[in-house]
Image (cartoon, rainbow over all chains, first blue to last red; front, side):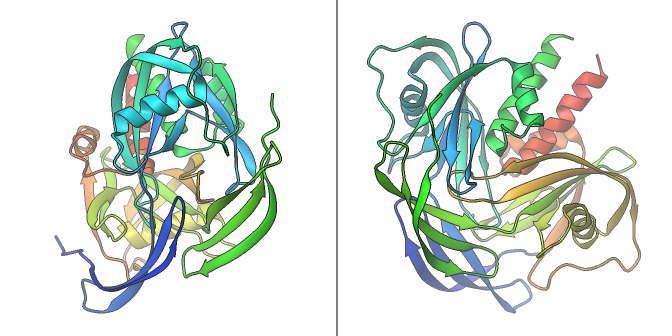
Length: 184
Length: 184
């Protein structure tokens, strides 16, 4: 197997924002030549697949400025500095949906865009849901519509590209797989 | 349902790179207040799940500078300006693996990080593979190791976080689902 590592020669910091930062790294390639890599640093995020006691999936419709449209996603949110992903998942679930859960099980973690960003998403499944009175509320610049949909509806939303992001597509496919294995 | 749209008041362009560009948008929120959105523009990408005639999955091991490590992924690459995704998928498959295919079927498209980036990945399944003599070669700053693995090996790689990105995790789960439905 070939050596693949790229060594950093120089790092130029371009931008340090509220959510992301951007730096350009000059790297030495495995063949000794140099190239540049544009890299986004992100604090990481959690996503939660909440299943109600009736077997419905709780989702949020949200406007995504980067896409200039609304999409339907499973609840998710950025990690705060030093925050434990599991605690973050509980917090985001409550803030975005008003639900608390008895069980929160880690499913998978993945990088979303390894070509240019270090964002990792930790995905959990939440069951044993109940509505909390006086639930913690959304960040002041967050606005969502809450939906509770069946698995066939979620698959239809994927067809229609109302559901259109990787974490939610993964979560829906996970439920399909679980369903398929149960029916054997 | 609540109105969710955010109107752009002002766009500040921060960076225009080889792969991504960054802008900060001042937006008017649904409640009339203002906030800022940090947005990465990306040309979009394709990913290919190549299945050999022996039923193995073709993957590439690649160093990802954003992660400071190598990971194992399905072949993928950025769209060139104006490039048709299907043509891009055929090109990337040949460049990264040396394979050409008889069948290239679109599976799903998804946004990878809708919170801050407009990157969309178009995922295809390639079958009827054959090695091409004098195949097109990688970009001069790309270095990969080629792997051909079984589905159980791929699942093991996910456990070990050698496979660690959303598009590859989705692709492996897709094969699991297909397998599970076949065995019914």
